[in-house]
Image 1 (tube, helix red, strand yellow):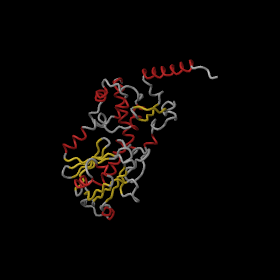
Image 2: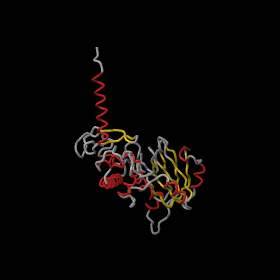
Image 3: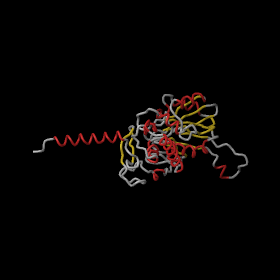
Image 4: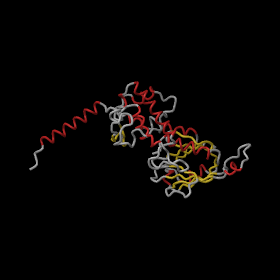
Amino acid sequence: MPELPEVETIRRQLAPLVEGRTLERLEILDPRWSRPLASEELAAAVEGRRIERLGRRGKYLLWSFVGDIHLAQHLRMTGSVLCEPDPEPAHTRVRVHLGPAPRKAGVRSQESRAGRGGRHLAIVDPRRFGTGELLLGSPARDEFFAARLGLEPFDELFTAEHLRGLAKASRAPIKALLLDQRKIAGVGNIYADEALHRAAIHPLRSAGSLSGAQYARLRETVIEALNAGIDARGATIDDFRHVDGVSGSFQDQFLVHRRAGFPCPTCGATIVKMVVAGRGTYVCESCQARPPADRRSVKRRAARADGRSRTRPAPR
């Protein structure tokens, strides 16, 4: 799933290509994309409007049009936005037709004139989970995100104390807290695993049990992991692509994610995979010590299994 670094990569590549242009036509080929709003209604609201800014909130791309009209686009698990794909991919769900770029004062080169022509974007999504939500006015936009997103780790208000406040008295695993978009916007499975490894915190550790120093370190490592992903222009595991179809490269820098069975780059122990908060999770249990209560539970289960094997009658 595209997480904050992947969506920010797309935004940075796409913004210079779309800002200032008019959205001439929006072809929504899959009505699921705009539900519950009818495809024709969403298209009518944005067609003919100039794109003032392409922003990002958490994992959302935010298209802002003249007239205080906004479109919140979520790529979900397998979405991507491609510019001028040839041939068009099989799983194209939306086509975006843009008018010519605005003229820039003093720019007369042949190359610049050629680049001012209309553009065509394809929103591709094999699993059809991506969405586009129309938001009429800044209050509706702000209300939409306030109901869905907490602070981003890059926000100056996202301090160690803020993180500690989110986790206060929580017995849920710390990884579950990192994945909760209503509390922390933009962090997904990849960057949660990488940040927890950097912080030497086990993903099963209860969120409310960390020390002040651990909250401070985790805040730092979440930001470190996200910045590393942005610098590498995202991670491509399955479907994520840049707007020109090129893959990201952060997957080549993973410390633990998707590396089960491989040696930990920090200590050499074997990385293991487990399920935490319903997600496949990768951890080095040498660097990231399993919580004491969880270790006792593992020992009790092993002892019960051993006891059953001892009392079982021998085979005849």
